[in-house]
Image 1: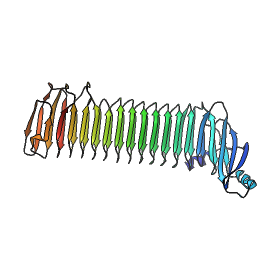
Image 2: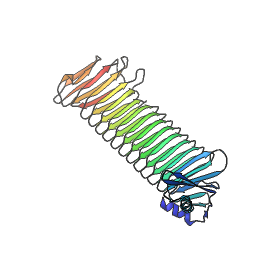
Image 3: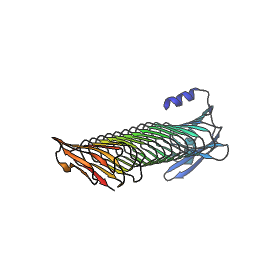
Amino acid sequence: MRNLTIALLCTASVVCAADGIQVERDGKLWRVRITGTLPAVHRVVADSELKVRGKAGNGTHYTISSRVNAANEAQARDFARSFATVRTSGDTVIFSGPGNVDLDVPRNTRYLQLASEEGGVDAADLDGSVLARTVAGRIALDRISGNVEIHSNGGATSLGRIGGIVKCYSGGGGIRAVRINGQAILETNGGDIVLGEVVGALRAFTGGGGIQIDQAGAGVYAGTNGGPIAILKALGMVVAQSTAGPIDIGSAPAVECQSGGGAIRLSNASGAMRALTGRGSVIADVLPGSRLEDSFLFTGAGDISVLLPSDMGVTVDAEMTGTQMRDAIVSDYPGLRTVPGRSSVTARGAINGGGPTLRLRASGGRIQIRKK
């Protein structure tokens, strides 16, 4: 980020004169404000907090504010004349100094690139697209009609209502969003990802947090190196991977889940189910009236429970290792032939005349096929 500022300052630039300076008491300190107007800008760099709002009209206005320790008003005013510098270079404006920057720009600005060296970026009410960067500060964007791209080395990201595509890359902060009206790619090295609704396809990955998704309008990939995954509803196929945490999928037309050591629960499942965990239970609750496809459920150490609609036809191929007990595999449906072996029990057969293959593999627990 610092290199970006230096490069911009090395080009031809103009120091902007302030329109006004305001000074007022703020407790034991003084609050100073510098206001001014700017030509149309598309790139903004600030040393500290940067807040941008889209407004009606064509003018661009800024306010730089800071609280200072001064003996009197005159001293505070002298400080205000020197504590901030505003430079323009083409369509770029650079705010240097410790003061927080509030910037009003035309709402219909087609594109804005916003960067903060030592603070956060907060932007809202814009009809165009936004690229936001911080070194470690928080990024908050809301009511952005266009596309959004975010880069942060570690700050949290908060998204309200975004009208287009979202790409977000964080070095370690959490990512939250209310509604994304396009597809989204969200990646962080260590925070939680919590999403309301994503209309398009979604890829979400975190290096150490959990993932929670209320609704996705297309396919979903969700991956984490250490937390839980919960997806309430997806209109496309769900692929979920966790190195250690549990996975809970609500409604989805097809699922492929893998956990290194957590339980997997598939609620209102349909289509093809593929769920594998190294340790923990696997529960599949099949949606009545749905069409099941060939499926595979596996646990290295735990139970498998499948809840089937009473009229659904499937062909069962089940095996429980580490036991010779016939009741290691139980079914509410007739038609399964259970055979104990030296170190395993198998059960195969057709339920309701047969259908897609339901392949079940477990060790050290029980396999249950229950009637809903």
